[in-house]
Image (cartoon, one colour):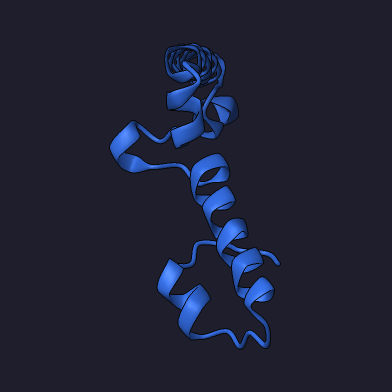
Length: 89
């Protein structure tokens, strides 16, 4: 079962389950998605698993490095690009 940005109530109420084990599997899949794959804004966009296993600071630091590198690259590209207007002169 693929779960993409759905609420638990949608999993339970909108799907049809014909046996209890199907419902249990759907709930397990949702909990897995919610804790392992879904980024939580209240946790600075890391997963609960990342927070629990202590990967929060590593992830935040890596994002900060990527952001700095991206800003430096954009600055370099913008300062070294010649506008088309000046090229014609």
